[in-house]
Image (tube, rainbow, N blue to C red; front, side, top):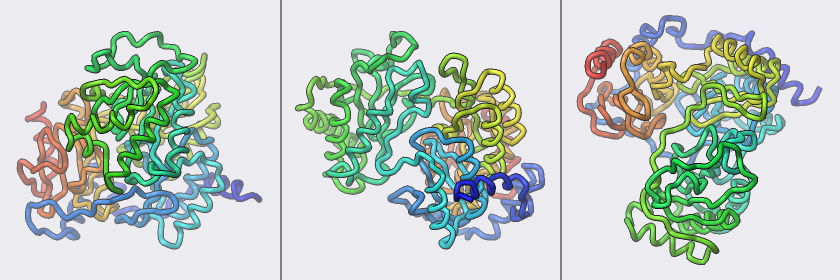
Length: 491
């Protein structure tokens, strides 16, 4: 039997396995589970005062060959360059259970994470994943739309340009940038990446008004073009200029080289922000020799993150069904069952998407509706209006070593209260529950942020997890206290 066949057989057994290794409150209703987890947190977290607990700042992201230590073992992260075959994704779920703790996640940038690996199991896991034929992206973070190549509303297919940038960054100065540097090649379409943070961004020229002050109301016909028109380049949140598509890869590589010259930890936002107008001028000077480059002024236009949930039309008669695990986390059994059901419903691929989504590709309309109902029964979110989509939550304690709160259990317990209040911000979550001051799940502002501190939960209003809390909430009675806050202050 081939290695792949063995893994697919293992994936088929995932749903039948329940080793009972979950915490003792896992079968209780959400509020009781959250309160029990808070009792656990009080017994294990030192109470040293209202300040934020010291947290380790990572210089690099975890990868498949180099996983990161967390509270529940090692965490490996996989970035896919394209859709995965449903059978391969089911096999990955089987490997996550065989070598880890059976918990997988989809990140805010649309990457897959496998939790609970050990020093002994991680190498075997990486080797087995290498046999699955997954389109794993390595090296510089260069991201294109998850629907690229199938979304007829895209202004252009961003994949060739993204591939050229990634290839050019494997050597030379661009290969020496900070590990977290990200490049976005945004083709527009149904799921544009305008709301995804990036050090450097390329977007269709039609998305930017001539004055550089915002998005155009005249973006042209919805159908994709054979080739892109001019592209707009921005860096560090500022517009840099427009340029021909043929020069885009070289321009991005030139800016990456400039970034590398400022040190192995340099990021574009700091480079541009610290220099003000001079910082942007420095970038433009590096691009002066690029044929057809024309400077643009102003900030990068603000945009909300695209919502992957729902039904998205692809080629005639076919659709992508957008789903999401609640708060980005799912069991291996649920993912394996979803992947097998997707294959049975005629799907030709599944791809993670920014916004912690999963897109099931190539479905007929009737198949998509049937799969949507089945996925909901497996615990996946299928409705963009689900209140859990208005809550951002990291794993928190005990899964994360930095976590001072059981963030995801608290988020689940507070979902009903969030549903009762109107959206408090035009974009972004109503509630952010962060296990520590890093705010990994949502670095931007939220209407209410709960942040884990040594002495309880810090309350931040209209701010981020790293902002100074307005007051400290004790862990005793935290769930009803936040419910009252949601119902009174925001209701």
